[in-house]
Amino acid sequence: MPSTTKKRLDFGQLLTHKGRVAVFERGETIYQPDSPSNTIYLVEKGLVKLAYLDESGKTFTSAIINSGDIFGEMCLVGEKSHRHLAIAVEETLLSCLSQAMCIEALENDLPFLQAMLTHFARRLQECEDTLEDLAFRDIQARLSRRLLKLSSEYGVKTKNGTLIRLQLTHKELADMIGSARENTTLALNRFAREGILDKSRFRIVIKNEQELREKCGMAS
Image (tube, rainbow, N blue to C red; front, side, top):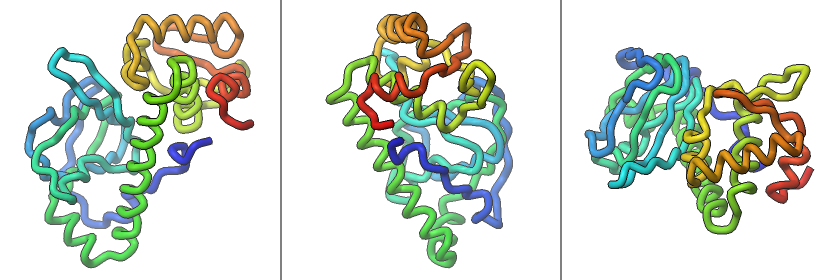
């Protein structure tokens, strides 16, 4: 699997002094593009989607943030306002840490500094993987890679295959791979006909991981 499927660092184990706590319901906006970027968010519980919007309202999902991980960290390297939208995928509990608090931790806590360097390196690798997908892979290959990644990070083994533990619409999947919803639906339907997966409303079960790997040219 690509490097993006590696186990994420648990910043909750590193940050001993946490900021204020905030709770967001499913679908609630945490921050909008162009809002001030001065807070680092630690996901204590739940999931957060980061997405870019263009002027026409089109969306591209850049990341899904897990429990124990952080977002909003670009304020540590000079970002003044957010470039993307942050939305709670499910009921989510966040610790909101000030920019100054994290800078102090970077200056005085070597394990935290090392974790942040690893975190930025992983995010850069994820961006490069995404650019490579958009530039060189067709929709079926991009969708296969995304489903494999989601299965690795959110999959639950069942008697019928690996259930992706996320409620995803076809539009949300399309936003993750830079495709139109209609084209994503066509690709999902083809995978279902070929016995690679089962799908229903908000539910996907991967039945044949090897076939998915072959769709995107990944080694077994």
